[in-house]
Length: 427
Image (tube, rainbow, N blue to C red):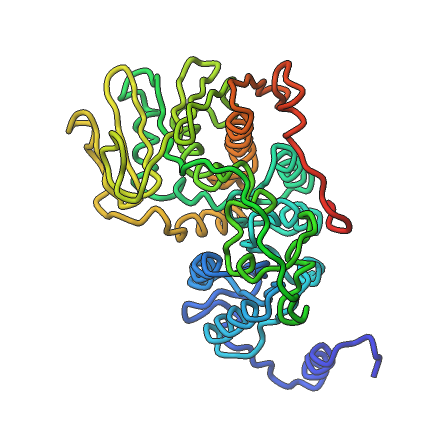
């Protein structure tokens, strides 16, 4: 036997030669509700924790997805995901590893889900783009303005389908509110409101603890491009928020990646950013677009605060010369007049539910179209978040040029647009 001929090919060829019937299971032909292998999207996962598993369950629910591998620097998390996938498919085939490059190097994988900590998102997206994979990545997708530019450029250069995890773009009540604003029924839009969390200064590093076995938790790889610092268990348990090395933009992009993104959409500003930002304390930043539309980024809690009308996380409000609309995560919508709510979605879906966002991504992989939260949308929305945060950190009004993506006559602000990556974790 020629050693270059696989066992499967040898048996098939022999069967044809001697007249044996070839039996092909119906599932391989797409019968009985199954999807034929030629139409399946084979996926791998990179860094899948609690939120990542919510997203993964949406992928696993799709009949045209086959999830085959997980890379994570924590053994406990990669084992949970391996068992989850194997339970879904009734086998033991899901592969697990520490290094994302093992997954990105596989020719059989079409797309990846990247749900690492924030500080790994951009580099993971860049590496996946170079490896020819389509990408669904949780937000915020970047730590700085420069990282945002790099990931967007990489996706475009390598012709990838990219979806940021800003799933509210595909949640019915948010879509209804944004499209109401864009339709002109509110009149000319003059103000858009995005809820944010309280802005906080950088927390001091946690005290060092003995590092675990790398096979259990690979701390050096967990840090990756971030500056070296002593291990502490709380970081890997999710307590990295508030530490600027892992939580960019004073924490503003974590919420703003959703709410400012929706304001960009409602204001017909997906292709640009505001041209100025002015912070007014730790709970309010005001911005202005070249069109004259005002952006208000303000505090909101789980039950609503201030003059928020609709309860729920991530509220947004769009105001025009002839009316306003507001909505939030619990699915409720309020407007200045009942007639504006004609055709409002009957079913209320949580704003945290990514099921339609996942489906949008998969459909675009097949069509090679642009998903709702593609790299252009993500670039401008994320840059706006980072620019607003820089203004808050500097404690003064800043002016920004959307064309050059730089601050105007502000060397100090422009220096804050990037941070070096630690070797060897570079793009």
